[in-house]
Image (cartoon, rainbow, N blue to C red):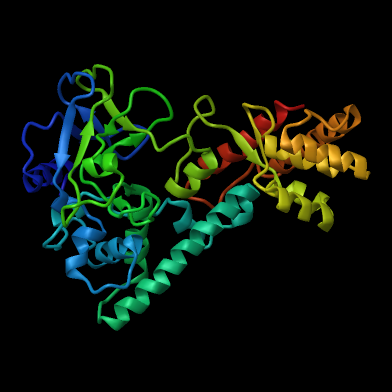
Length: 390
């Protein structure tokens, strides 16, 4: 089934008419969401009724309890994955599931599970991808046990496809009383056709009454979802975007499988793997007590994160009097420990940058990933950031 047929059937299923957007192929992505007419600022593009959103509330009546939202949605998608070019046989959400990507063969998690060499990635990227893999395997184990208990048939390939749909396409939508509850997510038809940009005009969800009241939805299935056009006029043929937030390319690569160009990226280098080996156990404990152990980054702007500066100031302290003054910098009572200490931590930054650049030079050739260009850009970004510090 081609995209126009599946989208038309999706609109019929949603009972939406006169929608001012449609999916089209794009040079840089498989598809995007485009305006088919001139759209005034902050106009309602569409509203998806609550019963057409795929989340823990709409699925709960159809499954025994025992899974969280990610696991439940992934289970349901696994059971009703379409066998292209056929449609999904799901009686609840079939027209929507049919529009989901056919596969995630180029996603970094898929590549890793199929044997790609994680050592070809920058260490912080590899670590983040390993953590994503751990999340996936935990959910897979839980869902497999649940499926066996309830006589449901799953395959590993289908669950990976389903889980990546959830991880890459779910959005925040209030389902629970507490705003921080991990079950406050949903899959939303049409919305997930849009691509990401860092800056510029973006579509935005309209706040629901539930979100404004900061409580759980009153309706059994939750609230409907309304999407607004950007706050500027959108001309016909213009691609409409979402923003996933101010994420680094490391996060975008690991979670979504892409990176953005150098001029639009939030460039940073995580240097914890290089810096943490410099500390004694005593100083590590001090940083842990102060809340400054780890999460050490070199940024393009600002140049060096305050967490890293604080840690490196402690690294170069050798006396009790300097240690007291270090605590005073943490408390904001003084700006520096001493001039000598400032010179010392800045030299360590330079040494660390040189080590990052040398490491990146060894990875000019990358071959084991379906997104080799993205991996090369990750290494290049680390080099650019570190060169800016030298």
